[in-house]
Amino acid sequence: MNAGASDGRVVNDVVLEVEDLVMHFGPVRAVDGVSFRLRRGQVMALVGESGSGKSTVGRCIVRLLEPTAGAVLLGGTDVTHLSRARLRGHRRDVSIVFQDPAGSLNPRMLVGEVVAEPLRLQGRGLSRRDRQARVTEGLARVGLRAEVARRYPHELSGGQRQRVSIARALMSDPTLLIADEPTSALDVSVQASVLNLLADLQRDIGFACLFITHDLSAVEYLADEIAVMYLGQLVEQGTRERVFASPSHPYTQALLSAAPVPDPVQQRARRPVLLGDDIPSAMDPPSGCRFHTRCPVAVQRCADEVPALRRVGAGTVACHLVDDDGSGPDVRVAHPRDTVPGPSPTRRSRSTA
Image (cartoon, rainbow, N blue to C red):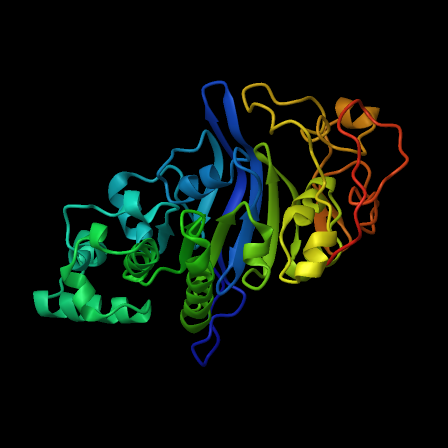
């Protein structure tokens, strides 16, 4: 990790490095060689369909799962093989917010006890009064009143429970927050408020954030970088501006075509790219490019050769059909290319989703 500036600011320090991460569950190849890095104060969105392996990556980072291979470095220290005793010191630097707040909060504990749990487990040596003060401060930070501490999780709404989860995650002052689908279990009416809360907290506190989601529209105004996963592998990565303005990989283009836009006229005119069958099984992934069985523009080479994740333009893409400058086919319009048998391309107007 790079040293800070003389005025106390930290300059370009890497909080998280994931190197060739592999996670297999027996024959299931959930994650296959994922690599990326995250700097202090940066928000990276890890996006993909259900079954792409993105949540597994998050659980490997916090060591809820033991990776099959590869390395996870927090602050320059590889934590993949640390003992439980040594891992405890590093765990205060990383926290996770889970998808389902009802399932991640102990129903037998008062909210105040739930939020204070990280302080107790990490041996901060605070008095009861100091812990109560920290809990009150933590609840206020996420927009909850102090009296919520005396209630049980089941007495709260879904949005309130997720705010409690966020308060608990931030009690240890982590340098890295993993947000694993933090809004997908919430009503649409409260999703935006939770996203705005995360954005405000990240801006004010400055922690790095890995935001895991299947919904690209949820990260348009939150993420600095976007990494797209498909069937256990990264297929594209780049800045938010580049990915939304000119996505290169056909899978990224398909995801963007399905993301809703706020303008009802534009939304009615859009035609999402239909990818046909569900994502293939991770027990027996397709040969070559794993996306070729659903790609509207795939050619025989896509079935025969595994594309390398290479630098193209201002990002990285794993696709044989993308040129070095990032240009390539756009599956959001009809494309006259001889394809491997699969779904037909769907015509739609180009959108900045």
